[in-house]
Image (cartoon, rainbow, N blue to C red; front, top):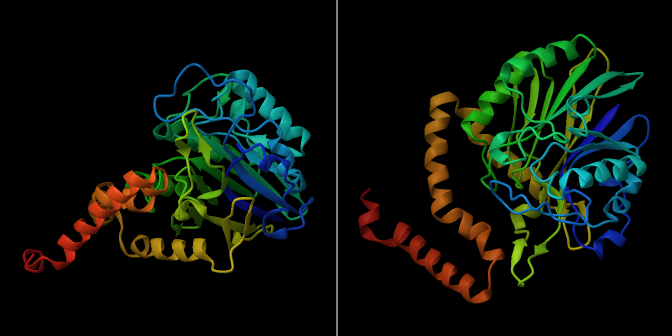
Amino acid sequence: MKLICIGDVALANDKLCRSNWMPPGSATVGDEVKVLFNWELPIGTTINSVPRSSGPRLLACPDSTNVIRRWSPGFAALANNHILDAGAEALVNTIGSLNRAGFTTVGAGRTQEEIERPLFWETAEGRLAVVNWVFPETHPDWMSVPGPNCWPGRKNAKNLIQQLKSQTDWVMVVVHWSDEFFPYPRPEDRAIAGELSRMGVDLVVGHHPHVVRGMEEIDSCLVFYSLGNFYFSDIKDGHGGWITREAPRNREGLGVQVSFRRGERPEYRILSFWETKREATLDPFRRAAKRMERVNRPLRRLQDSEYTEWYTIQRARFNRWGYRWHFRLWQIGKGDAKCIYLKLVRHFWKLTCMPSNFSK
């Protein structure tokens, strides 16, 4: 049995929603091969009037499930910070639309029992359980019913994982977590991943950062901190500005093809996707895979306090100029972009050319 895991899917463009995409990597899906993705946006008509604690509320286009119909039968993870952006009615509509298109959903529901229910996939090779959680730092509608499956804390998570381990061959956890755009996982992300591994989880797959992050093997658990976006529509506000607009790093999408065989540990193969205006396709330049390899380097050599110290320095640099350079320039007008560009050029010149900096 093979599971092709990809990143965030957010389809908000009406023209795009007349498309009909092939399965990722032109895979032949069926009983033994399925696609799992994070379905980011609800299918509704009216934005939820209650603002989120952080970030905009967004909608998928009404016919968005038609775009991915050829991926079915497959799995859609719904535990994320946008799934209630059009209220409870749209969540119910989203689940129904995905079900009718051939997808089993996990990570959100109409009742508490449905919200918390894991997904099970069984073939002749074995039985897999999939749990989907959204974490508080992503600013979801926390503990809402109907709503997403929120991280229950370490004790409750451990109890669930141990229960599932007694019923299945493998346990997979899909997490919507962490912060956005920075390419390295937070120290607390690595700590939680380590705890999930000790609980008995076999595979962790992360969404939400919108960029590719690294992976590591913790004991016998494979951890992919973020697959990035598979496809995320550019979205404008009512005044011509950009709510979301993809920078090159947002267009890199990691795919993980995981093979499961009874009595064996999961094996994986990396796929690289690149988002164009019309779809996401296999990337001959393998940008996502190369990004993951670069990000892996500090994860291999640094642990615990050493990683925390290194991360703090890198994060401060990113906050100072990295975000503006790699992402902000793609979301603003030409005049503002030119101003930021000149400031960044001056900043780099000071860092690399001024004599006082050579003595530090």
